[in-house]
Image (tube, rainbow, N blue to C red):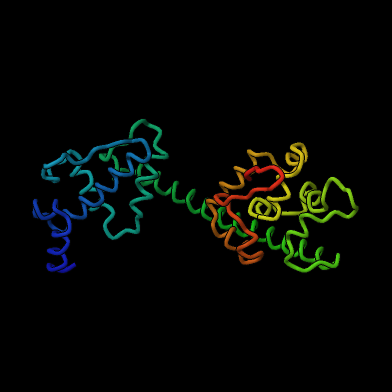
Length: 254
């Protein structure tokens, strides 16, 4: 950063300008503010700076200065480093004075391994759910073709009964038997309309209201699964849970 860049940065933040902070001091201030915000989020609330006071007089200023000097030039993700202390520290409230300690570094390395493992598990989860949805797409469309119906006619699939007067559609049986991806079913407009006219005991054989909420939460946290379903089935068929899905028979909302 050039002197001109430093001057521009100082103008953007009144604290930098008022106390004429150097580039290194601005970095210390920024890291300390990140720590302050994250400490509240993870229920280790720590106030670093007092209002209308020179930030260099703050109680933990030296601790953050040491932290930056210790890890200067090293590939440390400061946000994850702080998160590791708040989540893995077992000795009561964590305070900034221990940021540069060996035990803090060990917590960071442990958390980094956990974070990468969770990230990989998340990737595997998305891939497996997309495979399920793709299998369901093929299963439904092959069934439609085999029974003289148009591919993509999902209303027909979910309303089709083999014998006149059947109280349960073929698709309902498939859903109960586990042939259809539940991640797809909770996003399918056609399924939602057929599901809501079923008797409650039949509904519960597919999934309960609590299970629907759990699948909904998973999909909210994994938008790539929904995007894949839209690619397979089309945007009109895939209806996320904030959309109204009603039936004339019951007026229920899925």
